[in-house]
Structures are given as C-alpha cells and as structure tokens.
Image 1 (cartoon, rainbow, N blue to C red):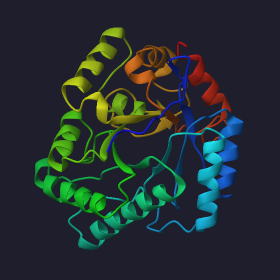
Image 2 (cartoon, rainbow, N blue to C red):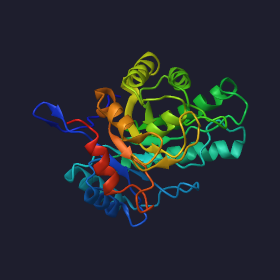
Image 3 (cartoon, helix red, strand yellow):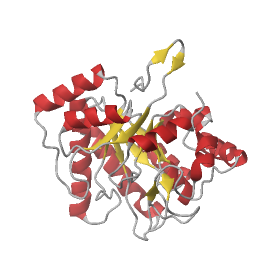
Image 4 (cartoon, rainbow, N blue to C red):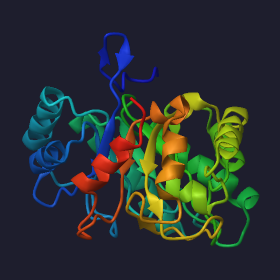
Length: 295
C-alpha cells in the first residue's frame, strides 16, 4: 500500500502538519472543533478509554460525519492511539487475545473515520528478553493486519526503554519490521521516548547522528508521525513522563535543532503534553512548537 498524501502542497511546498491529541469525551465532532480552535491541522484520538479493553461505540452516522468534516476542515492525517493495556508479547493467552482484538477494533474504526492508522505501544517482554518474544509479537502483528481494512496502517511507537519495553531501540524496530514484512506496518517517533531512551539531539552533531541511525536501521519511509513532547525525565533515564514544550529536560533549543532538520520537520507532529493548565495539549504548546520550526 502506498503512503497516503499527508500534506497539502502549496506552490510546490508542503504545508507543515502540526497537531494535538484531543479527547473524544464530548464526541468525535467536538474533538475536530477543539483541534481547530487550538490551531491544529492534524490530530490524534483514543477510540475508547485507554485504560480498558473497550471497543469504539460511535454510530456509523457520527463516523461518516466526522470523516466528511475532517476533509472539509483539512485536518489530516488523523491517528488513533491504541489502549495502554496492550502487550503483544504477553505469555498470558487472555491478555494477548484482548490486545490483538483491541488493535483490530481500532484499525477497523480508523477506516470508518478516515484515520491513517493506529499507533501502539508494542508491550514488554517482562524480563524474558526481546529475542524470546519476537515470534509472539510478530505473529500478533500479522494477525492484526490480516483481519483489518487494507486502507489503514499500524504504527509501532518507539518506546522509552526500561521494564523490558519492546521497540526502545531502532534495531529492535528494524527487526520487527523485517520479520513482519508488510507495508502496512510503520513507525511513530516520540521525542520524549527517544531522549530518555538514550537518543540525544541537544547538539547538531547528535541530530546528525540520530538522522544517520534512523537511515541505517528502519529507514525514513516507514515513519509517518512523531509525537512532540518534552521530558520530565533526564536523558537516558527511561522515565516516560511528558512535559510541556520547553518545560522539561529536552528544552526549546534541542527542539529547535531537531525540528529545523527537514527529516523531522516534514513529519506530522502530534503534541501529547500535559498542558499548561494540566488538561492536556493546548494552544500555547502548539504555538511554542510552531515558533521553533523554521518556515
């Protein structure tokens, strides 16, 4: 499957896509309106409560209306973030079955609302080691892709590391991609996860090194999104706690270095910050992020 057009092309130049994760607690259409008010032109949502295995419960009419209105508002791409409970490496049959079904539900829902696909935290090997759970993870991914609409994609989010988290290195992600061998499997970057996982970008040399690391492992063609989050954890700490842009250990200057590299700035950027009012991604975070990108 060819990658979808993620941008609007104006006078031969791509319009940068910068967006937010938005709550759907008040409905799908409200989420679109909320994103637009904040100044976003792409977005991410949960399809259902992230701390539970509950399938999406939106009527087909609301899904169709959302899809139509998103096109009219030029909010694209749209991503779904999978449940936090998912573990595609679990040795517990029930949890593994629920994890696979949850992703099947999300990718099916993505097709209904015109979303590009679903972003997932792959899970943890719980001390068993990556190699020992590789077949379980890849078999699970293949099962998900075989039972979902071909118009959608599954994105493995780079993990922060620690506690046996799978996909915390580009080498592990490369191995998963190689074993699955499906163009519908992609990768989502995350600035906080990369930073606390040991991939720095505080100097131009580090940005260049990170760029080369990605090129020599997973390649840029599989990456279609990046979560833009500052970090409450220090570099290499594996502490997965997001902070507002410029308020954490990454800082504005590092973001500026990273986002003025076209390899990163050309990706749709999604904020998952706590917000200055602690109510989630907000307009202020969005404006700060925009100011750090050279236009």
